[in-house]
Every structure is written in C-alpha cells, then in structure tokens.
Length: 444
Ligand SMILES: [Zn+2]
Ligand SMILES: [Zn+2]
Image 1: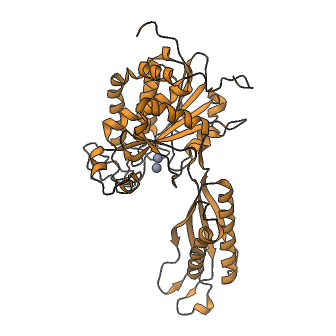
Image 2: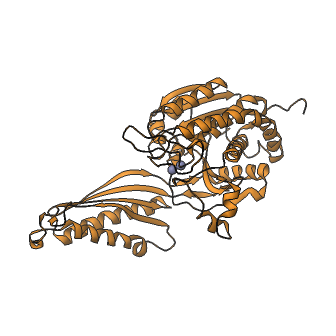
Image 3: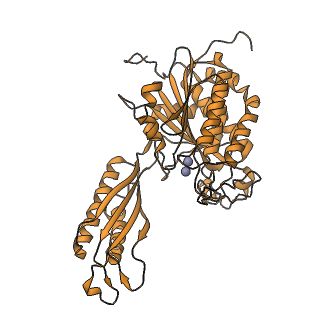
C-alpha cells in the first residue's frame, strides 16, 4: 500500500518463479481463446475504421468483454470502451489497445485484405497493426477472466479510439476515465513492430519521441509575375524559412540532443505568372525531451518572424501548434518488471535491445494522473513472418528491419497466427507481473 491507501505494484509480491507458475495457469486457456481472437482480428482487418469512426470495432470489443464478465462502458471519449474486472484486493492495472486504422490502400494481397473505402473514396487499412493490439487486448481480457484464482486486483481494459490523430487518449481522460473508473497503479500498452515474430523490444526511459505539428502562415503581397518589384513574394519567403528551419537541429541543438524538424507541406500560389500573397507550411517536430521541444518551437517562431521581417512582409506570420503529444517515457521500474517477466516467459533470446523510435504515440497521456504521474510501460511485439525476415537483405537486425514492411506501409502484413499468440502472451504475462498473486492451487 502507498500513502494514499491504494495498493501499489510492489516489487516483492510477485517473485519471478511464482510468476511463471501463474502465467502457466492463465495461459493454459490460450488455445481455447485464440479462435475467437483470430475471428476478431480477421473481422477488424477486413473492416478497418478510421480515427473517430470506430463504432463497429468498439461494439465488437464491448460485446466480448461483457460476455466474459467485465463491467463494460461504451462511448468514453468518443468510441472508447472500458471494461473493468474486480477480483479482490490488489493493484489496478490498465491494459490499453488502440482500435483505429489509417487512410492507406492495402497492397498486401492477403485473402483477408481490406477493400474498404470511406464514402469519399478514401481507402482504409489497418496499416499500423492496431487490429493486432485490439484482438490481443480482448484475448488477454478473456484469459484473465477465465483464471481468476491465479491473480488478485482489478483489470481495467481500455479500447482506445483515434490514436493516429493523437486525440483519443486525451479524449478518454477528459471524459473522466480515471475519475469514473479509478486511477490505475500501472498502465500497460504494446505495439506491433517489424521485428521477427516471437521477439520483443523494451526500452527504459524514453521509448518514443514527443511530436508537435506546427502550421505557419506567411504573408506577402501579390503581384504580376512580371513585376516582382511590386510584390513581397511569399514563395521566396517560404523557401528561406524552410532552409533556415533546417539550421535548428544542425546549429542550435547539441549533437547529443535528438530532434527532427520536417516540413511536410509547402503550399503557395496557383499560376506560374502570379505572385501569390500567402504561403502555408506544415511541419512535424520530434524531440526526445520536452525542454528541447520548447526550444525548437521557440526557434521556429523566431525564424518565421525574422524571415518575414527580412522580406518586408505586410504583417507578422501566424505560427500555431496543431497537435502535440509528449515523449513516451517508460517508468524505469515498471518496464524492467515487464521485461523481466517477458524474459522469464519467452526466454532471454526473444528480447531485442531497445532503440529510441522517432515515431510518436498518444499513450503517454495515460501517465497524467489526477494527483501524480501514473507509471506506464510500452513495449514492441515483433510481427514479421520468419520467412520474410530471413529473405530480407542485411546481416544485423538493424539492417534487416529497414527492408521489411513497417507500420503505415501498404504492405504491412503481420504473421497472423504468431502475432496473435505472442501478443496475447506478452500482454497477459505483463499484466500478471503487475497484479498480485492469487490463491495457491490445491492441485496441479
Ligand atoms: Zn500508426
Ligand atoms: Zn500505431
């Protein structure tokens, strides 16, 4: 127990030997649970839903959680689903799976490939593996419900919408996730990765960078293309801004401070012979550290203003933050506990050394407890079929990983059976490592 009287995820409660025994007792039901996990995965993969539109996915998750004994609430922060299973004294462990898909046209050629398009003709695909996350979340929930004598505590299952837009986690929290269902003692999340199926990757501390999207409107004065002297050309201004933005990382940060500044969108004008009066830039910024993010954002604003001034702009630029998510920082003790549990269950050889991802997540919002930070742990589950991995050029895992389809690729194709089995195991074992032990079985 900690000073607030709520149960802690303590170091002493789950010695590793006991964990392996409890994991065996829970996972003996895995073969019975997997057919439904596979059915759900097939359904979600063939019928993906974009961020904020996860109605069918949420209903399928809710129905299955209710059927296995969870108290289920729907419509939390959009299409968010929360299932709670109270099973005696012990910590509350939140298991998070994200449910949304991407506007990507699937090119895997799989028999269960998505052919879904939106009303406007936008193709939709589970190109980030969130169908694996959701299916394994439901599978883990079922496994824990079937073996309540092997653990004590409360399991809070969260099917999260709208991860790809970085809005779903925050929407669920703002809709009272912790106020209504309790603040968890630990939050666990996993993501598919283009590593060989059966491998897992954990990183202490920061595991993914923070991300901020910035929009810059630059103002000029329009004129005939033949009379540049009458204009303030926002195309030239914008080009200067783009080039000088590249000096932030190279000239203003230390080589030891990881950051990315990319301009992904530059729009100005419509005709060759018309100098427009405005330019629009959209950027993504990634940093490993919140303080570095603040310095980079300040530098972006300074450069946009300075270049506008140098161009003789009629008014200062508009610089606005469109979306933002903090760095994904694993609680050191919690991720060590999860990694140790995975090493115990899968063997040390199944664990890949952790590398920092420049990709981002809205998972870190779950660390924002009402009174103090909530420990979170986030790890990667390898999903690449072994044959694909073996055929990929390169010697080292780092060389190979860049030659197999990764998240957001139209060719991202997890090994179906292996990913679902390993994903259920990894989430279940991690949950058990955080929950208290159950009753000693009377017979084996
Ligand atoms: Zn994604
Ligand atoms: Zn994702």
